[in-house]
Amino acid sequence: MTETASKRVAKTLGTLGRASGAAVLAISCALIVVPLVFMLSASFMPALDIVKIPYRWIPETWKPANYVRALAGNDGAWMYLRNILNSVVVSGAIAASTVMLSSLVGYGLAKFRFKGRDAVFMAMMGTMMIPFETVMIPLYLIIIKLGLQNSYAGLILPFMMNAFGVFVMRQYLVTFPDEILDAARIDGCSEPRIYWDIVFRNSGPAAATLAVLAFRQQWDNLLWPLLVAQEERMKTIPAYIVKFAAEKHADEGAMMAVAAIASIPVFVLFFSLSKYFLGGSAVYQAGKE
Amino acid sequence: MGARRRVPGLERERARWGWRFVAPGIVFFSIFSFYPMLNAFWTSFFNKKLLSLKSPDFVGLANYVRVLGSPEFWNSARATGVFTLGVFIPLFSLSLLFAALITGLRRGRRLVQAALYSPAVLSSVVAALIWLLMLDPRGLANQFANFLAGTPGVDRKWLADARMVQISTMIVYVWKYLGYFTILFVTGMGKIPESVYEAAMIDGAGPFRRFFSVTLPLLRPTTVMVTVMIVIQCMKTFSTQYLFTQSGAPSAPINVITLNIYNTAMRDLNIGRASVMSTLLFMLMLGLTYVQLRFSRRGEDDL
Image (cartoon, rainbow over all chains, first blue to last red; front, side):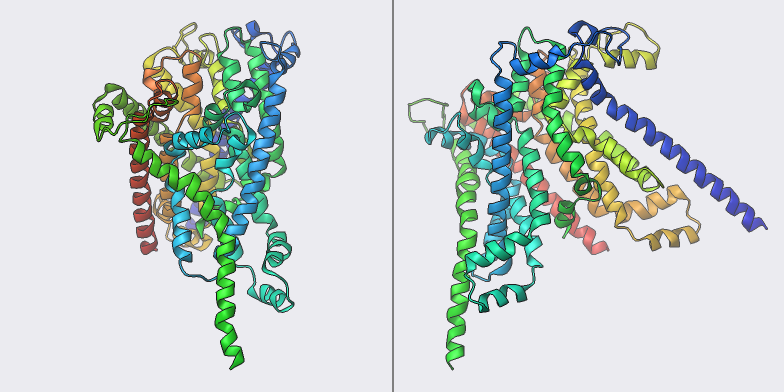
């Protein structure tokens, strides 16, 4: 009897604990989302309403013209449209090349035996420890020497692949069944065709995760475009945002419209692929092996 | 006989294909990682100026002496250190707490994780920009702080006061990455076998005891990884500080090392001195990675 009583007490305590835990989480989630709601609501307000005390979450006067101003810029040159296109091109190209090159190199490291293979692998992994800030100036000098400032090539080249991508693809391809590869060889399939038709076509999940990560990372990159793309028409979204916000007559409502426009594509990407990020991401799993 | 002779040839042919597949990687990393790394190290011994046609002079350790003797460098080192510590403590403990709470949740896990993660989806620049407006003297941050403290009309000088602007950059960072590290912890906790908890429960361990005696020790590989990730990321922080200083915040308190490298190279055009700081940053990171490797090895031995 005492046992059932103590069990009941433990159960009540457990329920109470869970309930308060859930309450803490609910409040925290609400607080975390506040700045995002602020961005959206402020993007439809005249600048003066954004600093009104108390803040009105639903705009009293709607000002969708903020979005026009955001796209047209303070100088009316419509440079944001071009800069968004730049971001899409650069991030997209980097995502594609990262997947292609990483899978090629990862395949070579995973499925072929040759002298010095482990040394090559270790050396590549070692580059993960080099902070970009350390190499950015020499890289910038290389780009100047090649005459690639203010060009897509200059923005893309240094990020065409990375050690993390090689690692992920190698780990993924190590488990690829050798029997299939040998069978293809016996059938007289050439090595490049084996890679392309059999290996690459079957690395979907790892390639997709890697592509999303590379795209996302590049979408966020500010430092490199700041160095390489100093001309307005070659800037990417983050560089445009910094410039727009620092301008003298920048309108706060338009600033939030700029921010909202920059965020929409990544939010769409994120929520359509949320299972990769929230269910314990595939890449994280690969990183643990 | 014939077959035996063919096998070494075949192996050599296969090895050659291995090299061919790996070759693009070797070329890429040589040009875009190893060469620049060595170049930065090399340049740190020259008084090289950006865009100068004069060939740089070898100055030995003079750049190192100049940098290590300048108050501006130590100010940057301190700003980076303060930022790292000020982010690490709340970010680590809050994400661990939230992960523990989420693991105990019966329903709505996905929703909570998505909400917590949503700021991580934004660009760093966008995150900083949103906060720039909220931290305005008449903005939401003051209204909220005054509502909590019951002090209407007080301006906390989020972007003007030296100490407050440091705190503001920390807030942006913790807010942005909380969900990311929470999810790493949730994943780590998911790998702890249920049977261990059941055994602890039979032994009469309460929820707190279970957390500190079971979850934390078994979570060690994740905690080590998260610790090093936060520290390395914080030392490389750039966007928030850059946007804040560009928009008129005082620069000295948040002149972190990456911002200093950028300004030394691009504004002062002094590549030699920027390379010194780059080299020092690299050595610091190398040390941290070594620490991580040692600790994670020891963690494996324990298990």
